[in-house]
Image (cartoon, rainbow, N blue to C red; front, side, top):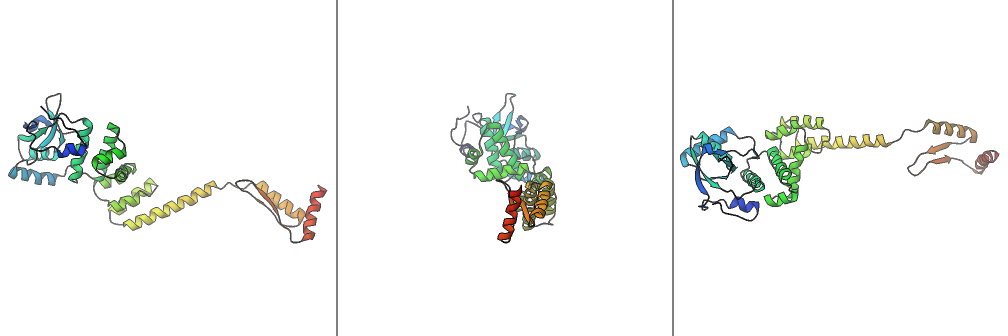
Amino acid sequence: MARKTEGSFSDLFMDNSLSDEESLTTLRLSEIEPNKNQPRKSFDSDALKQLADSIVEHGVIQPLLVRSLPSGNYVIIAGERRWRASKMAGLSEIPVVIRDDITDEQAAQIAMIENLQRENLNPIEEALGYKEIIDKHGLTQDKLARALGKARSSIANSLGLLTMPNGVQELLRQGLLSAGHCKALKKVKDDALMTELAHKAANGELSVRQVEQIAKRESENAKVAEKSREIKPRLSYYTEVEASLTEQFGTKVRISEGKKGNVLQINFKDKEELENILAHFQEN
């Protein structure tokens, strides 16, 4: 019979000890299935081989955490690397802790915590893991951050990676971009330019500082372009009126457009010129 446990997701993860005699058992590897919602999608073959060699020599030190399925098999909550490595090592059975009291939401949290603690996720896998938990279980970023013991800004920044072009995300998956490069690239608004800069950064052609400078220039150019679009084209009629009145009054006339209204400006240099202008108005 599975032992009921209350508390935070972190408590659930930390509570999976070998002293849980009611749940600790041994299962055939063929009875265990990987979790399709496992945050980590790629497994380093060399690292798995090293773990398999260790298992051959020392056995599986830490049991897997699993839940039972209606089919009679068990799904992995935490420990897929150990399961894969055990298969490579030629084992037929593996120690497990069965926890049927853990909900889907808690299972997703525990899988994420295990990978984060072991630093096994690349930035995109981590972001996708966060997104899946938020979307599937309706969590807020703040609640997820508290459950994982992370700052909310860290969750938000991670999720922001998923808005980047696919080409940039792939470079992040491969570990070819530094955190500094990534932060600088996020300031680039044009996707095509961002992808181009990302590839150059990955190839060692651009430093973080250089990417920041390019992003700054792009932002400044965009502001200038936006401002120029806001300027309305001047009516040719205004130019015609200016020319006509200038000729009529014998002095410079200027029409200025403003946000709150337009201004008709008539220049004069002395009293005589002003009286001449007034006379034209009186005649009309």
